Structure formats: structure tokens, C-alpha cells
Image (tube, rainbow, N blue to C red; front, side, top):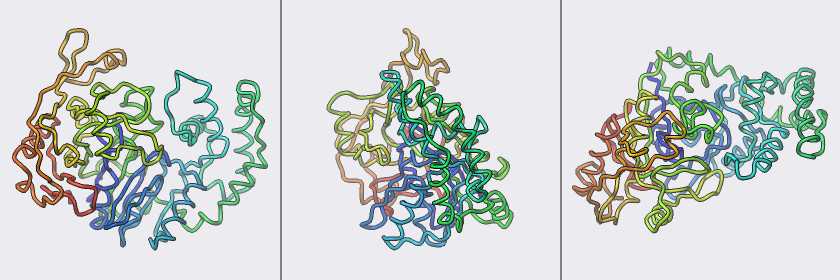
Length: 427
């Protein structure tokens, strides 16, 4: 039962799309198990660049079946727009499967997300405004709309009315917004139903049968470990579980079927949105990382906050996910620095702390403790093996591996599909 989980080991934007795409030609299914179109994956194939937001990266690999699992929240308009864009570029999207139990992002979820964030002012979380959080809240409050509801108009109307009972009170009385009518929402959602219907399936059954037949299934997380609703830097987190456990609940596959858990690590650290970030740089080095690394959010379009590599959060990701391997991305971005600082611990109120503090207050006040490693100036984008890397680049990778607690099995040395050094096979 070769089932693999591939997830972000930092705050997202680590390059999961490249890693998934690299494995896509060797796996039978690639499954998104959480999040929605608030996750952005960039995949470079030859001279073509693809920006994916909701669709699994495996959709770009011929022979691979892409799956949107029950743990994902789906905006039908975004889904159809992405499919249309790929079809126009000659990508076959016909094999896509969507769980009938996945929840729908409704127009009122998007409205509530935007007005709530504006209302919070300085206390805002930094959401993408795409309705992700309110949709998950509806799911937990049991007033959510699922994909399967699109095919029973009576049930759909009842559920939309139930959800709007409270939301319209909030929109009109608290936010001074116009009430939303159930008929309007139902009409819009039914307009998507027939277009989506060919893709809707019992994905839990399909995936478990595939594993029983020794098919290779790759579970692809959005966002990153430190954005997990339970294990991230709450409340500055996403509304789902990008950590490895989320793959089981978000796809309907038991934990005993997972054989490998791969964490994606950027060779430095970035974050989008609000929240604590101990190694964040506000100087020329931070700006250089942003410029050289092209650090702009695929989904949000916002500049990413940049900082040096943080081994404390890497160790934390190893522990909470049970990581078996790391895929280190963007090593090439660090070319040109004479010295590269690495955060090995935090100082909190005069104490040295080597593990992530569970207290939000402590983490907010954490100051990075750095060790400095010698850099390199040689171009590494043509390296095909670990031995091709400059000695200092090799030592940097080895140091990160030792500090992080799991072997680095692949290294990204450029944005292209073929600009990867594979040290140990993931399959």
C-alpha cells in the first residue's frame, strides 16, 4: 500500500507544487485533502509555468488521476475557471475526481469572509478573503453545503435557507450590508451543477480500492505545518489541517495505509499574512531573498515576508507530522552570500529554547539564536547530483538535515521540473 503524504514543513509556499509534480509521473493518484483556493502551487514544465490554486498538481502529469478529497472546500466558479484555463493550454483534465462530500464555498461565505476581515481592522488575521474559513465554520456548525447537495434542489434550498437565517442577521444588523436571498444563491449554485457532475465520485471508495490494488497514491497538502488550525501559530493559521493527520480525515484513508511522509522545506523561510515570524528580515538580505526567490504569493499576490532558515520549526514539523523525509527547495536562491545564518534556537526572556514553545506569548517574544555557515558563489542550477554541489552548499544541506531531524532526500536547485537533485527515491 504505497501511500505518501507530501506537505509543507514551514508556513506554506515551500514549493510543494514542484515536489508533487516531480512525483506525479510515478504515482497513480494525487489527492488534495484540505484547504481550498487559498493555496497556490507554481509548477514549471519546460518553458511553461502553471499556477494552480484548487486543483491537485498531479493534473499536469499524464496518466495520473487528480482527486479533490472530502476535506477540501470547493469554490465552483474557481474550479471551472482553472479547468477551462488548463484545457485551453492543452492539458487533459478529464480524469479529475471530486468527492461528493467536499463542502461548497458559497457566495455568502465569501461575503462574510471579506466583511469580517475588514471589521477586525488592526486585529485582522490576514485571510485571503475567499470564503475558506466561513465555509469550514459552516461545516463544523452543520449548516454547510456539500457537492452532493447540488443534485437535490429541495435539500439545497433548505440548507441554504438554514445557513442564511443567522448570516443575514449578522450582515444586516452588524455590518450594515444587504440581506442575501436563498433563491439567488440556489440559482447560482445550480448553474454549476451539471458542469461539475462528470467529476463527482465516491473518492473514499476509489482511493481505498486503489491502495488495495497496490496503486501509488500521493496526498498533497496545501499551506504548511505552522498554518495548521491545531498545530500552527494560532490564531494566525488556516482553517484546516495541512499536517499529516489531515490526509487521513480529508481523504478517508486510514493511518496504517500511509507509508511515507515527506516535508517540503525551503532553504530559507517565508510567510504570507500576519503572525509571529522569529527569523523575519527587514533589511537588504530580506529584500534580496524576496527578489531573487520571486517571493510573491501565487494565490494572494502579496509579497512574502522573508527570513533565514529556522531549524526550530523544522524540528517541530518533523515531530508533529512523523516526517520520514525532507525535500529541500530553492537552495539556488542562497547562492552569492558569503555567510548564511541559520536559526538553531530561540532566546525567550533570557532563556535558550531549542523546541517550539507551546505558549503563544513565548513564541511571540522569541528571538532567533543564529549559527553562521559559510556560503558559496558558484552556480548550482546545473547540478545533477549531490557531489556536483560546491562543498559549502553540501555542508549547508548536511547541517540543515542534522538540525531538522529527518533525511533530506531531494534538493531543488532551480524552478524547472528537471532542476532537482534526487538523493534517495521517495518510492
